[in-house]
Amino acid sequence: MKIAAGEESYVIRGVIDRIDEISTGLKLVDYKTGQAKKDLKFEDKEQLFIYQLAAQELFKQPASSAGRPVSALVFYYLDNNSELEFIGETRDLEKNKS
Image 1 (cartoon, rainbow, N blue to C red):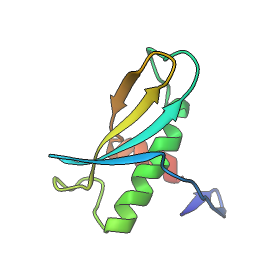
Image 2 (image 1 turned 120 degrees about the horizontal axis):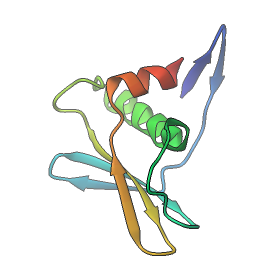
Image 3 (image 1 turned 180 degrees about the vertical axis):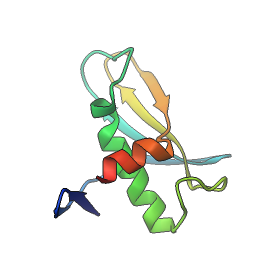
Image 4 (image 1 turned 45 degrees about the vertical axis):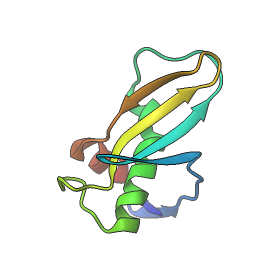
C-alpha cells in the first residue's frame, strides 16, 4: 500500500495476523504481547488503520460504505487473552493517508 507523507509517498508492507469473517464483515486481528491498554491513542491504532485501508482497497469498498468489508479491528493481548475492539472512521482513515 502507498501512503503519502507531504510530497513524498512510501510503500508500506505488512502482514495481518488474523482475519475472521463475522456476520457484519471482516474482523482484522493483531496479536500483542505485554499488558493490555485501556485507552488507545490514534498512534496506537495506526497499524490497524493501515490494514483497514489496505483491505478496503483490496475489496474496492469505500470507507463510508455500509457494506464495507472491514467491520472490526482488534488488538488481542496474549498475556491475559483480552480483546480491544474498534473501527477506523472516515476521519481516522483520512488522517492516516496524509
